[in-house]
Amino acid sequence: MSRTVYVNGAFVPEEEAKISVFDRGFLFADAVYEVTAVMDGKLLEYDGHMARLERSLGELEMEMPVDRATMLELHRELVKRNNIENGCVYLQVTRGVADRNFVFPKDTPETLVMFTQTKTLTEPKSGLKVISAPDIRWGRRDIKTVQLLPASLSKMAAKKQGKDDTWLVEDGFVTEGSSNNTYIVTEDGRIITRQLSNSILPGITRAAVLKLVAEQGLEIEERAFTIEEAKKAKEAFMTSATCFVWPVVEIDGTELSGGQPGPLAVRLNEIYIEEARKNAI
Ligand code: PMP
Image 1 (cartoon, rainbow, N blue to C red):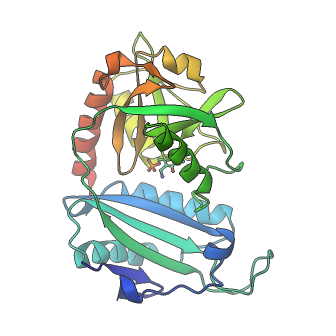
Image 2: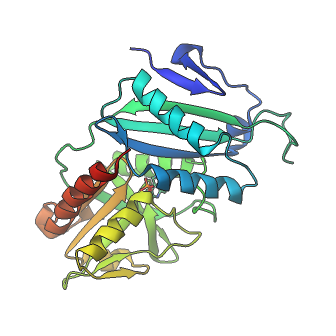
């Protein structure tokens, strides 16, 4: 069935949606995006995603294309028109349409595109097998731009080896997964995840999970870790908006937590879903 998508002020069938070949999102990846999960027809962590969108735009000298109230209305309308019970809303803002030139155009309206995807969000999670690879992305990974080719290549490298994902490594330390934040658990139960900086995306799920972890009285260490340390960890997991807390059971061929999803990751996933449901709007 054809989806209804949103393009610059209009809801249209996906076949009729059009973007200019001169759009800077297309020519320069001059665009940022957000993905907000939808559960039981409601938006999860919506405020967090919009706050990050505003920050991403600001870092690139762009602005919110519509006001906050309109943005929420658009999200809800798209969910409604496409009957999304479980899935996500994808949103992209580009610097707009202009003659191809490296210099930013002046007074050009931004492009705003939104669409939905259906996805089962709460399926039982078998553990993920990951490989490691050098992080070849640019130096501002804290901005959620659509420059996703390195992420796509790293995901493909994993798939070609029959694995699920890649943990990216820079200067000997894991930055994050190809589309998720990464965590390890020490033998004495401390949760280690890389500190925020320009090197990683500040995950909205990361922030929510760390809050829950603190509420559970568990100890968090925000610092970089190596693949060698990860291989010796009691368990490992990753987080993202549409995967929640996903256990990792193998890193570069080394099995973790007996090849089964670690109990802490499984518990955190349950707690996260419960909390996210409560706060959904
Ligand atoms: N890091 C990267 C590189 C990502 O692409 C994502 C998913 N957008 C994340 C982390 C997780 O962020 P979030 O929890 O906000 O989905």
